[in-house]
View 1 (cartoon, rainbow, N blue to C red):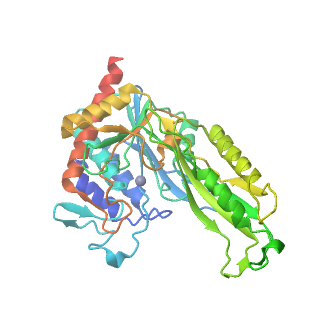
View 2 (view 1 turned 45 degrees about the horizontal axis):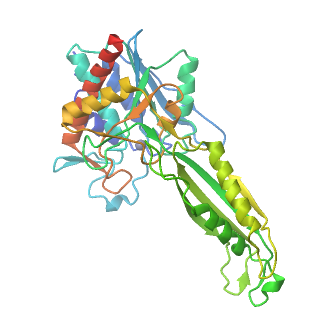
View 3 (view 1 turned 120 degrees about the vertical axis):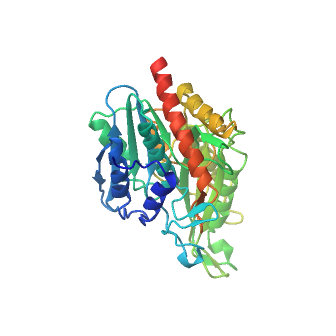
Length: 401
Ligand SMILES: [Zn+2]
């Protein structure tokens, strides 16, 4: 009988050795497909393309027939290693040192996938495979533009008749130790750019110029104060940051002709895209009315506001059967009560939430995207046991309903 992929470290090493820096697959999905075949998964490998972006390989694998359907989701692509010489071990070598495995993707998130596979393999080996369907929805385009990845893969699978009752996304969610945190939602993200045009001139003759920076500073001040809100029951306060102000002007004696100011907002469930845009547009219009580009000149300041697409929506998963099963598994294995959090950046959960309730739990994310990304072998074992417990617990809960 074939040896089943029950060892998460072995699974992870095989995945790390494929240098799958977005958009390259470098054999990662083929490695995964071969790994899960003995578990009874039937895999499909759709490639998605779009003008202006690289073709991306994806994997959708399913085992089991009718009954409750659990999706396990993730990505095999990784961010570049950066200066490989700065690593203490080959970023694609999967070296083990002092109880930890080193390599790009070790925690974000080939490690999570390796544990999904090991958990399922142990259940199959013990004769405890879930009665129902389990699917793996794995993309190679999460760290890149995310255009030919999870969003298209969900649509593709749905068009073929697939439907899911719940999803666990294996991104690294624990800030410091296994059991810290489950993510049950995410803030939204909205980016805008303001352009103010003036009239270029000599700084010594401001009456002959219109300085767009006078307008940009007034508009920028109106963006950052007062605060957008003071948070909600499940979310931290929304926050706006100005990320850049550019004139391209290198001369100290020239008033520039134009300036652009870009800002990003991470927003909570007290806003929708529409209400937030209306708030920002109102603030800018009032500030423009009260400011001018030249001493002694009247307003309003003329400006253009461009919203960048796509906007990431805010979401919160309210599915007790899913959230409680996961929290109970984490507590049973680690002895700790995980925080149910909506903090951090966006993830592919923003797409999955339109198809089924989704929660996120994975490894400790401290070294993700850094030089010397690594994972403790003990954490891989803990996560595998948590995932196996969760799969069993979730299916048991479905059967009881
Ligand atoms: Zn990730």
